[in-house]
Amino acid sequence: MVLFFLIPLGVLAQKYTGKRAEWFVHDRFGMFIHWGLYSGAEGYWKGEKLRYGNDYAEWIQYRNRIAKEEYLKLTDRFDWDKINPEEWVILAKEAGMKYVTITAKHHDGFALWNSASNDYNIYEHSKPKRDIIKELSAACKKHGLKMGLYYSHWVDWEHPDGWDHTKEIYGIDQEAYDGYWQEKVIPQMRELLTQYEDIGMIWFDMWFHHSETVVSKEQLVQIKELIRELQPDCLINSRLGLSVEEDSDVDFRTLGDNQLGKNKLEYPWQTPATVAHSWGFHATENQWKSTSTLLRSLIGNVGLNGNFMLNIGPRANGEVPYEIETRLKAMGDWLKTNGEAIYGSGAFDLPNDQHDWGLMTYKLTGEGTHKTFLHLFNWPLNKKLKVSGIVDQPRKIYLLADKQKEPLNFDFNQAKITIALPDKPMNQYVAVVVMEFDDKPQIERGLAAELNAGGYSLDFNNTVSMNGETKIITPSRRGSIPRHINVDQPLTMRWNIFIDKPGDYFFDTSYSNQATGSNGQIMVTVGNDKLIHQTKPTGKTVGEANNRWVIDNFASNRMGHINFGKSGFYDVELKLMSDLEKKFKWQWLWLEPIN
Ligand code: H79
Figure 1 (cartoon, protein in one colour):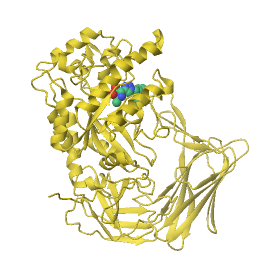
Figure 2 (cartoon, rainbow, N blue to C red; figure 1 turned 90 degrees about the vertical axis):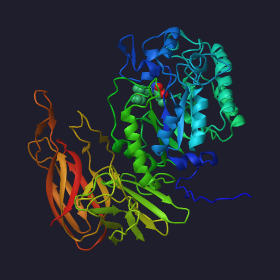
Figure 3 (cartoon, rainbow, N blue to C red; figure 1 turned 30 degrees about the horizontal axis):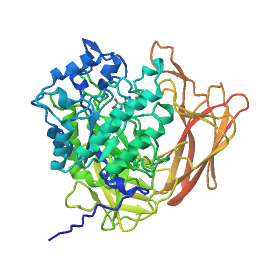
């Protein structure tokens, strides 16, 4: 008898997902493993540290110009009896990760499996003979995780005709490169795709489009077709050297190393990330990110429809550094309680970073419930949580960590939901508040959110319109000169705000005026009310002592106050006008109720 189980996976928020990538988009979180001969060097060679500020330990052979024969001697440092890939898989599972991608062959060209086509592999050089890919594949199967394989196709420092960056000096022959391709890359890909059952993804690592490299489009198409022939469901990432836009066989886009998402995308994408800096184990690694930083990266990516693949660099005895293990386990604990906000969740319609209390994710469940997840990185001092921009009333609000789903009291007013929070969050790192809706919650676009402690910060980030051509000057001198605009022509900006509590609000504005008297005018208009401010000199300030670090001061100035007679949407208009000769620089507008 065959039993069918219907598992509600949730209807994904993300559009344009190819069938193949559905599991990937749903699962959101995976493990990356960098492990190979370099793990035995630990970032040092003959007493010398790796020769490059970008301290990637897996690059030691290239950076420190190590000859192949000497590099291979690193096998002596491996504890072959102790290494157990199943432990990595168990850790991934404990961390709430759903797949494991290992460096089957990194740039050094050394294969972690019994490769019949090339004897520069672990099986030939370990004692007892080990086939790490086979062992990892079995462990993944046993524990229900998918296995992905990193394969360095472009760079190979072992094969005389593979690419290494020195060939920019000495030249490379296209025909010879194709020799490498046909005698190493293609046969090894074939082995990987046929010897180890289902492969979830092949993760390529060429961080340039092929047109900027020695690799030809034909060579990439050859690989791609081989994958599609042997494992039609296997995912391919964009570091193959082709973009998702130009080739629908490329299943997801890989951003730069440790590059987090900025914008919501409608196709699958991913950030490969490290817990510290290096990918391979490095003896003097010291840039450990905190657990909450890692969680914020995961949540932030999911809130933009992205994925997160977090790396471990085990040692030559197989051990995972304690700093990594503890963080991964803490993330897993958090996901045990809050996984619903990550797995099968994606971007909500409001900008992900609209609120100062944290980030949002969203899902439509299999039962037809719409859930918005509010991820709070700090429990608000006033025990209130303000959500701006949702114009439908939630049917229920509760803490995701609360098994009883005890409803939280809230106030709904047109475009503002104010939630009464309990005294303490129910878990560490990040607390998740769930808002449930019967229908997809509608939103008010372009609303400048009220800050959680009260007040509205209005600037170029949340303006709905800005007329007049101007350039936003990015922060300089280590941020001591903040982001601003030069008012060298009249400018008008507008914001859309929602006033929940009617009453008197004061308006402050920040600018820099380096003249001796007034050098312009700032005008705010709300309906029939106007505030006019003549700029005052703001003087200068100093960044650090004894550094000749003099900065134009940006100072907050009171403009006056305006009465908002009733609750509702308001249009705030700002006009900036400098005097002909002496121009001022403008930064922001702030309004806050007068208690
Ligand atoms: O396998 C790992 C690395 O060995 C390999 N890809 C990851 C997954 C890799 N090595 N180099 N690169 C990727 C590209 C490096 C780009 C860099 Fe930068 C330019 C590193 C430093 C400058 C941009 C800025 C990326 C990091 C900082």
